Length: 211
Image (cartoon, rainbow, N blue to C red; front, side, top):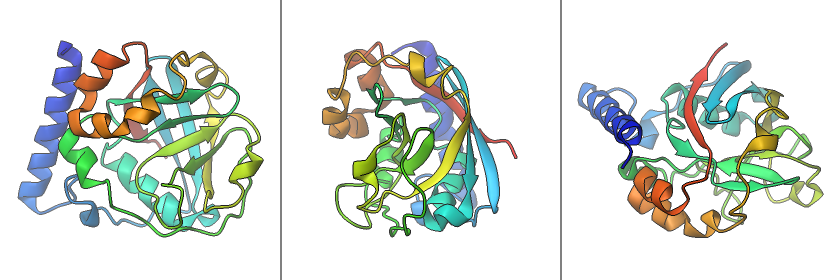
């Protein structure tokens, strides 16, 4: 395992352990992350291809906005692969590089929100399992007009305000859908497995609430 990856995984484990010991919010216990998101806020993602920013409007998708806010605030998206990159369609991420955390969130479903905005280019939406009320942690950025997603609970909660072209147009897309077919392995074995099996993928280094 690369030293930088090992350090990130160890840091995440230490932070999670400390939070759990203190009785505060812990990524190992999804039910403890239940803060209400502000009416609007932005999240800054630093990746291997640069920075992108997502502006969230809670009224668009309240449950989705709250879940995203809690995940970013508690650094869930740090050290994670942008594992599904389909040019002109979407980029998806949301599987923790720390197996214990990834497993804890597998069944932490939230109910659907009404779809009040369309899945057009730049809009950010939670993925689901293909059925109602199965959103957990995975999100995607629409890179085109995905009209087929306007039903099925795909409710956009935010929009990319920086980096849509500078970052998403340059992410490695050569693996196509292949990494997505190995989500079980990503969950079970974490960042090391992804780096070993899909070494060209781009990664989120950090994700932070900025205002």
